Amino acid sequence: MYRDTAENLLCYDVPREIRNSAQPNLQRILAQRKYLGVSNNAQLDGTEGKEKILNKLSQRIGLISKKSDSIQETRITHNMLVCQVATFSPLCISMSLAECTRIDKLLLNAYQYRLNYMPTDAKHNIFLSETRGGVGIKSFTREYTGALLRDIEVYITNDDSLPAHALLTSIATASQQCMWNLYKAGLLPQNTAAFERTQRISISGKKTLAFFEDMTAPTATFLTQDHTHMMERAINTTSKLGFMLRDLQKEFASRLTDDLLLQDQYANAIGSPRTSRATLGACIGEGNEHFQKFSLFGRIYLLVLVIVEEATTMTDSVLEGPTSTAVEAILSRPAIYNRLKAFSGEISGLKLASSARLSIQKMKDDYKVGSFHNLIEWRCFESCMTTDVLQSPTEDEYRTIITDANVF
Image 1 (cartoon, rainbow, N blue to C red):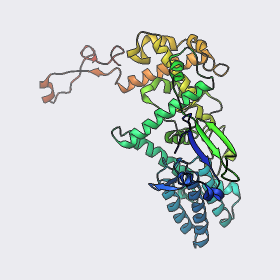
Image 2 (cartoon, rainbow, N blue to C red):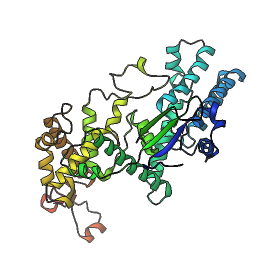
Image 3 (cartoon, rainbow, N blue to C red):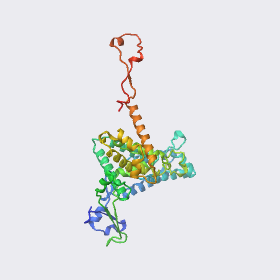
Image 4 (cartoon, one colour):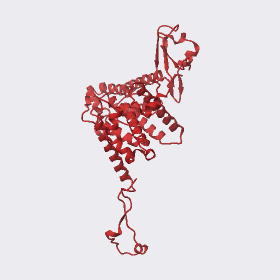
């Protein structure tokens, strides 16, 4: 890969028909290579490799439907094929819900005509388990999403492993770029520490040279900063279904964002009564894009982080964190939200303040429950334990050892 004089990363968009006439170094950049079974090029563009996987999967689904002798044989073979592809390196082979739905539609069509189903009947029936009266076909969307969530949970919780380091680095880099995107779009509140810090960030550009007819000169040139990151693609896929990855080191911001998500009338999950089954795809559809702004890289979550950081810097209790009395008082009143105007015309300061008070109270209550709040202790003599006499302690012999004063 090369950079120009302005330090922009040079990328190339060349149709397959004219790649043979390109320069040798450009051919090497666009050449497909496999690493751990994942096909991409030097630009880390796995579009062609993923399209090859989808085409092969489509062909095998069709061949299995034609060659098998019974529905049961077809189901077993299809499930083996779907599970094998969906669970193989879901973090490296990033797939959107639309691409997963495309595979589910192939399965839907394979059984719809063979069972003489109407399209809606097949949608309701084939992906249900046999115990529930369905055919028992494994949905590619469900298998891929489950494998993706499992890999994230397994790798990211093992702090000492190399995969955990790679995932956490990807999250940090993607968060920095998303914050920089808010700054460039003019959505970051001014006169804040986050604004000054983001102002000093320098993200190199990505210049794409597009060739369409010949390789003499690029037909068009595009300059962007849309560098993609592995965890950003994974979180964008899972967040559309309502699965949110949260940073527990910033627990209050995560809780406040979740509370705002629950109050949003357009953030309807699959099981919501406001979600029509007819609007879903072959299995569970392409999700709800409205969830993305509440995700780890979403606009609302990042702006909540800015507000919490600003409230923390306004007090002298930085080391105590956002649960201190001074920070609670700032976040529980609409003054800071009206001053920063982070959600101007979208969420009022009164609503943000009331949501913050509710989130703080929920967080305290949860910690109280987990800390054995109001735990009572009673001590007796050792000689009483050796006798068979049933002990009956009086009220003055009890002592509460975990109270509001020491629960945290």
